[in-house]
Each structure stands twice: as structure tokens, then as C-alpha cells.
Image (cartoon, rainbow, N blue to C red):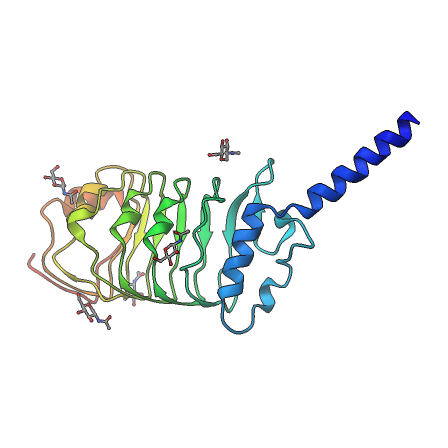
Length: 226
Ligand SMILES: *[C@@H]1O[C@H](CO)[C@@H](O)[C@H](O)[C@H]1NC(C)=O
Ligand SMILES: *[C@@H]1O[C@H](CO)[C@@H](O)[C@H](O)[C@H]1NC(C)=O
Ligand SMILES: *[C@@H]1O[C@H](CO)[C@@H](O)[C@H](O)[C@H]1NC(C)=O
Ligand SMILES: *[C@@H]1O[C@H](CO)[C@@H](O)[C@H](O)[C@H]1NC(C)=O
Ligand SMILES: *[C@@H]1O[C@H](CO)[C@@H](O)[C@H](O)[C@H]1NC(C)=O
């Protein structure tokens, strides 16, 4: 009798937990539903299975999504529906080499745990949201090879955790960005500003920065001076 009751409770719990849609799963499926054309590469993304078993999704021991690695998966659409407060533990968002269009929503900067944001090789347009510079743990920020234009540089904060920054091959112009000079005081290792229309002299502090850098690419710009 006791065993029977226990079994009943167990079955009830199983049904209940399998029916309750995990908010992270819900958020990912909502974004997937906004993508255009084939999402064949995301066919494993379905409520029938646990989010942690989905293609290109990594979870922590508690079952929260920590990493999304989706480079070169033929994804076409915007990032407008991507942000959800459900992602409390997301550290890596890699969507490089897809066909993302539209602007980068400022609310991507609300992923406070993000260490890697790679949106390179897409077709993103508009100003880079300055809010991205407020990501407190960002280590790698790669926005290269899009069609992005000047952010409100004055609102950019120096990113003290940043090690790699690429803004290469976009539509950026003006003087060498001051926030980069301020960011590189610490751990910057790789900086790629190539293929824009930056102009003017290089900052006086660049020579101090260079020995710490493993990669510096300023080619295909309008910089001048010594
Ligand atoms: C995130 O920003 C985009 C673009 O501004 C907006 O369409 C979307 O509703 C925002 N998401 C949330 C959850 O606020
Ligand atoms: C996930 O995020 C929550 C909320 O911020 C936090 O309490 C928890 O410790 C995080 N889990 C891990 C494994 O970092
Ligand atoms: C490039 O950026 C400038 C502003 O800095 C803007 O006026 C222009 O429309 C942008 N061009 C493209 C193709 O996005
Ligand atoms: C960069 O640092 C200098 C001196 O520390 C400061 O005056 C300036 O406002 C900072 N600029 C930015 C964009 O962080
Ligand atoms: C530097 O940038 C240019 C233009 O984006 C590119 O063609 C070149 O391969 C880069 N060089 C290195 C060493 O990465």
C-alpha cells in the first residue's frame, strides 16, 4: 500500500516535471521560431528532450544553459527575440558565420555572466550598442565582418576584463577609439580594427600597449603619422 502510494507520487512528479517547460528552453524555442528558412541544424531543439541534450547547447551541473556554440549553422534571422532573463548562467554566445541581420539589441548586454560574445561574419547593421561595454565579465568580443557603424563612443566604458577585441571589416570611422586605449591598460592580447575607415594619428600610448599584444591589426584604415 505504501509502495503503491509512493509509486503514485513518483509518477505524478515525473509527469509534472516533464510537462513544465523550462524557461531557458522556452526562450531558445521562441528565438528559433523567429528564424527564417531552414532551421534543420536545430532540429534537436524541441520540448520533447532536455535542453541540455540539444545540439550545440552546453549546461552546468544544475542544468542551466552556460554555452551556445552555433557557428556556421546556416541561421538566418535577427537577435531581437534572443534576450531572456531566463539565461542566468550564459558564459559563451558564439553565433559566428551565420546570416544574422538587423541590429544588435542592446539587451544582449544584460547577460551579465557573458565572457565570450562572437557575432562575427554575419550581416548585422546599425550602431554597436555601447551597452556591450558594460558586460562585466567579457573576455572576448568579436563583432568583426559585419556592417556595423560607430557606437556612441563617449558612452563606452573601458572593458577591464577584455583580452580579445575585433571590430574588423565594419563601417567604423573617426579617431582611434579612446575606450580601447583605456581598456588595454590591463589584459588585452589581441586587437583587430582592420578594414574600417578609422583615421587620424595612432595614440601616443600605443607603443606601451604593443608589447603585451600578441596580435595587432590596424591595416586597411586611414591612420596616418609615425
Ligand atoms: C530586446 O531588444 C529587442 C530590440 O530592441 C526587443 O525587440 C526585445 O523585445 C527586447 N527583449 C526583451 C525581453 O526585452
Ligand atoms: C547560475 O545563476 C544563478 C543566478 O545568478 C546563480 O545563483 C547560480 O550560482 C549560477 N550557477 C552557476 C553554476 O554558476
Ligand atoms: C556607415 O556609417 C555612417 C555613420 O558613421 C552612416 O552614415 C552610413 O549610413 C553607414 N553606412 C552603412 C552602409 O551602413
Ligand atoms: C580614458 O581614460 C582617461 C584618463 O584616465 C579619461 O580621462 C577618459 O575619460 C577615459 N575615456 C574613456 C572613453 O574611457
Ligand atoms: C589584417 O587585416 C586585413 C584586413 O582585414 C587582413 O586582410 C589581414 O589578413 C590581417 N592580417 C593578419 C595578420 O591577421
